[in-house]
Length: 515
Image (tube, rainbow, N blue to C red):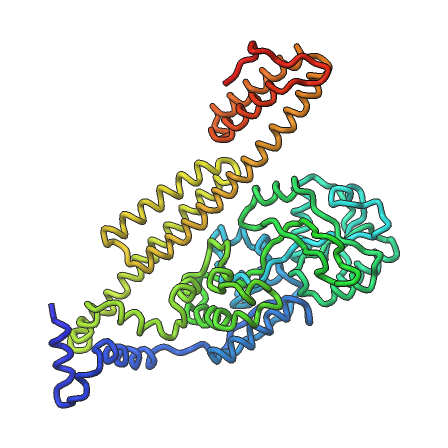
């Protein structure tokens, strides 16, 4: 093998000062000259956004400003009717990028047709009704007239998902944003649903502040839990804080529990990797500019926030999050590969071995990342039904990657990428198991409340019912429907409660079986 010291000596012949220049700098200079001669930066990219002056349209304008100022690429902002039209334009190759709600695009991402670039906001669901109406919560809307967004919009998609998931039958109204508030004021509809970044819609702020007869309604916790567990990639719990839209009087007057989806910038897998990398870097390097849409970016760590909760990230975007400016990629590559620095001399003099080696490593890394994404997609299908099986599978996959890394089969940057993906998924599985465990404890408390009530009336019947409950939970444990920790807590809770004397009834004696 050629030695680096010998190469540096050869490069320094006839120029004494070259001895002070690191070899990798000379190598990078030569390589970058070659790259610049055969690689051209894209002149323009297109983004499908939203209605003129709307939230998505303004977000796309900020992307355009950041991209032009940072990497010198023009962005054509295509106005649209919203998420679903944006997604269709992307699939029809009428746009390079699209702004969409995450719940709208999740299924298409799972199919591999679309990949994410960045999360740019969180969009809570707002349920709005008149203050003097009898509608106090989402579940009061059965049979009512509800403004659910125009046909084909992301708001309509989310509203339909919300209603269908809990079996709410409403009379849907497809009026535009302005029409909805007019129809609310004239009692032509009973409520309206809006999905958008907290505080980012000035029009919504003005409507709520100027009409104190309107109020925001909470979404019941059981509805929130159901949707988050059923599709954790698309929805998460959220709160609309007190005073978000006005300070005095406060609008809302108290924290409103709700659900949220995310605003995500997406692209196709076949879109030019250089365009994806440059656009991602433009957003990452100017992340504070996006804080009016995504407040956490004002003080948070942008690399993690911009990809928070995403599974299907475009490889070029992922590379930017890990390594930074894609225009420096060649320098980083050669600095981290001393063997290939030596191989460059052979490449320049005799053959293209270095380029072939680079391509081979890239292809091998892509295959590993693709296989990991495919396996995670399979495990995600298990998540709603069997989170424990999913977490066992992802931990097994993580161990395989760890062994490959130890053996030197994969480079460190690829290992770190797949490790982050599997770790994120494992955390999601654990959160889901924790939510189910909390739900199990709540259900147990409700059962025991019923049992205590029956103990007041008929202690013998109450003992029989307690035995049935314990047998039911034993069967659930054997069927892996609950974990052993939750079962032990349940049995301990029963033991404590059966020892507490009940007013007007005889406390259960030692004849009650204990686990």
